Length: 295
Image (cartoon, rainbow, N blue to C red):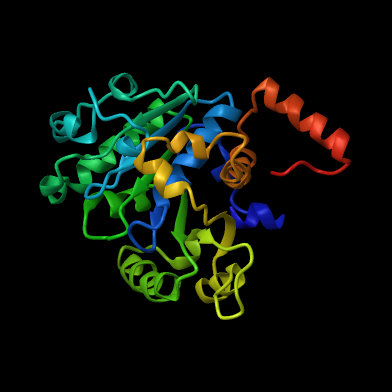
């Protein structure tokens, strides 16, 4: 994607329209990777005419169902264990068991593993089978994996991905120590070089104090291409704990515009057709503002 953003040719084969996997991994646990990845998935579903999937492969700390207020009658990843073991899962079955939030038409969500004590028993072959079935079920599938690389989902989810996004914060322990330990050191063991990742910064402060680290500092340390950022929003934790994550993605909330900017880059990169209403809105914005709409 970096080559595409910079205007160079890059690998044109990566720009096919369907069956693409975009994996988000945090440099550190519990920093907002779920919000960032799910926000991008929701926006792609709401703005494009393609089928968008979201797979929570955070085997040890899945909280998305709680953030969305969906506690009852929930189908989760562990419900597919038998089919994953038998390598018999089909795209139709995957689509059937996914939740379809009414707020984001076109989005299909598979919630994460609820049996944390069994996280280590998921094998690479099971995860790879799931991901390849997801390619057949969705045009674009957003995947969230755990920040720790001690499980099959994190490693396989990154190895299989067409785009890899590392999420970090302005805390030096996150973007320097944790990033180096996991992305540089452990990632290289599996053949993943740091420059294969894009960077997304979260919990950033618009008016950082002189003693605080900025997005520029994060980019300099990681040497990664910045695909976007999400500011620190004081109401984010409270809304998530109340099951009201979708309120953070409403057009009236500042976070909506931040994740939309990232989603639009993926939509452009993978050449996803926009819904007619979005195309009209974009044209109108250009006409009124006299400049390119945010993308």
